[in-house]
Image (cartoon, rainbow, N blue to C red):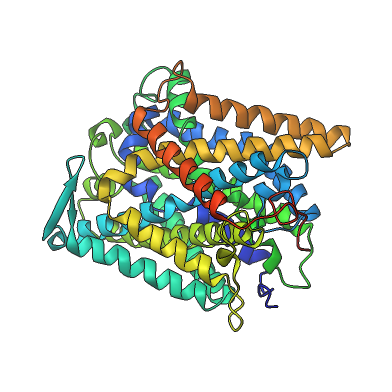
Length: 451
């Protein structure tokens, strides 16, 4: 019986986790971030979010050492909760990863059209007032197929691609920071916050779970670690990726706010590129930023593609959804059916066009916070060390508060009717697949790890 290839190293887990977090949002949604918190409010929101999530990263690092299972959240919660809780915990977390894939497929056309405006032609239809153009649609489909083929042919190919793209993103990020420090001015920061400091930070914290989702993607590939890999290295890769990802977002916000008056960027698409172009009066900084954005898009798309395909595969293997999703390719040792299923679903989501970009951020944030909360709760119930339980309690508190910020109407930026509808559709889909599966008590979500 074929098994997943075991070829991943520490650097691979870091770039997978970092790449799953950092995509193209810092270019496409910068005006939204500044509109939420202002330069200092948004930067503090991301920085604080990264620090607050360290206890959650600790829990994932502990869980993956004990239970290296691609089912991750579903496997962890299965140790202490009923099967139905385990199933929907993992299913909601799958949403947090998968939902990024069509987001990035849409974004690649959006970014490319900034360079080549001719891509905004041959309009097919509109959704929620947003046009869907054929060239941009085809570009997103092409990228999806490319990543599907790459992942289908082996995890080593996918990891090499991730390593290269992450390295280029970090290198260009340093260059962008240097340009901002060279040509920016402190006066551009004023006012530091969009509204009051507290509200500005809270509004940013609400989207932090979506943009920092990915540090916990490493456990989804735990079964593909090199035989010489030390399990204690998971913690290092996960925590480092979280801190670097949070620092990336906080510093890029500050760089944009420092290079140009941030209030003039509100409501403008590609505010990051516009800020640098206005400040330098040249086009080359824009091209540099767009190159960084493209590589960020590639790494984020690939990282979430890997994580979501592994979760879907694990569900099929456990037979909590049709067992075909758990099939492994004999030659390439990859979850072939799950990979093509994620690719097909991504193309379906891509058809929604730009109308997908806004709600995805909100739903993804809620899904991540829910998965983190369930994972921390399950670890608290199985752990006996007072120190570990204290850290886990902090993780529970942080995840719970992040979840409440999306669900309670008392908080600004809470779920709207459209987002509740999107979540309901996803839960109904999971329930229908679960009912169609040929699961038995032994193969249900509370089964033990295959290792």
